[in-house]
Length: 398
Ligand code: HEM
Image (cartoon, rainbow, N blue to C red; front, side):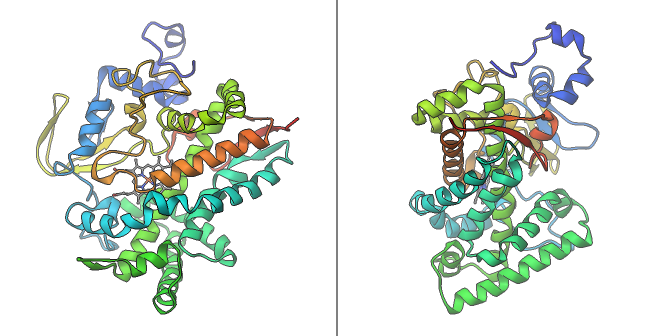
């Protein structure tokens, strides 16, 4: 059993002051919030929502909790991405891109993902100690998305650099003033994709971007700005989250080495392992909404226009929603976690993320003798996007 919430009066609880414990384990903070302050905010900040039922209700009630959180009058406001828009704009965008993300289209990516994963794993298996992020967890999702968007191999390094800069500064991009370097990365990436879109209009190709350029519904085709916005969204929503899932899997292997052996001996357990990892160490730990009206949540009055942060990672550990919530149960059933959100904005890339997670876990358990973390910091691991570097020890396959 790992990361079981510390009950008040627990030895550990006595040994550490609450503040000290919080520094070490964000899940302890969530636990305390679920118990004592399920809906709370600091000063004028966003309301933090900690319990499963409340998080699910916020995610599902898109009329009260709007995804249009940014001020549309902001100078650099662009065509709204699907993630940050409400009906009817959201419905139109989702319908246009939905088809290209169908389970059939995603299943067609299996060979690409497996091949890329095998290449990375061959190099990794030669090492005793390596950075998990640069050797597997980051390049796998980036190359998958890049290929889906038709980025050529020669442009891959540049694409990765833009994606790192954009994702690493996402808060400034959304709510603040990003640095000139970040603005430049955004502009360079836009210019690259504008050129690709023009090429695709002239010479259609069978990839996600090619399909999106062609895609049309009764509402018309996607404009260049909408296509660009979607390319940016995929980078933000699909890259670091999948990296986070691979990191989380290895964290579980480190904390519960028997799971590695179980999966090696019995690969049919892999899909359930990935689901439980998503619940246990949710990579998209929180999201954001803005209220459209005064509303009461768990007895707390929230005013119209306030920001609200559903804490997905906390909801997924709620002891009222999950039996033995603090335990990692490799074949947990049912497992109604909210790691991919819920309601109209539920993750468009969930099938792809699961496929990548399963292939990466399968490759690690089949090609390696074992894998463990050299050291780790629970705070940076729980952050959106995770740490920049995560060294792992690798045991060779006998
Ligand atoms: C383990 C990996 C992933 C996790 C945990 C994850 C999680 C999420 C969550 C929680 C949301 C809902 C956010 C909200 O309601 O505010 C979301 C939305 C979204 N995700 Fe993912 N995601 C992952 C991978 C991906 C991938 C691989 C892609 C695409 C390549 C992707 C594309 C999207 C898109 C486009 C949305 C917006 C959907 C909409 O607004 O209708 N995600 N994701």
